[in-house]
Image 1 (cartoon, rainbow, N blue to C red):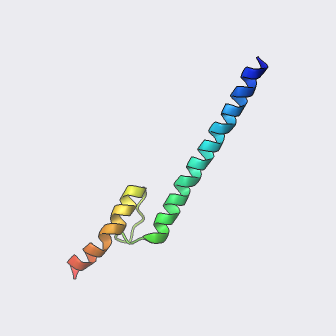
Image 2: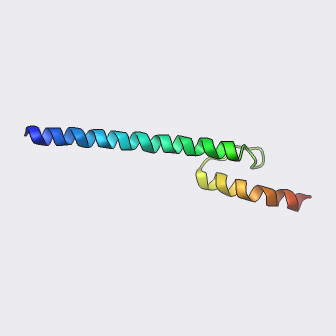
Image 3: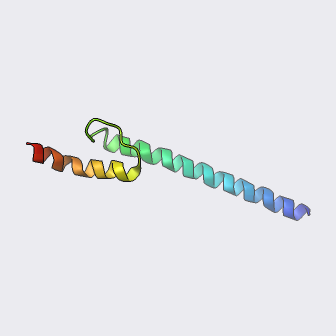
Length: 67
């Protein structure tokens, strides 16, 4: 029984560290996207990596079309 409880404790510790790492990655990814593409998408803040990346990549083409 003690071995089972020890294994469950370590499993919980690993799950906690994985969750903490995943959350840190999400925050870091949004921060980096805001740093690289600082609000270029029509002056509004876009949430989500795929939307931010698409907005950042399409911004130069939108500027050339408007000119």
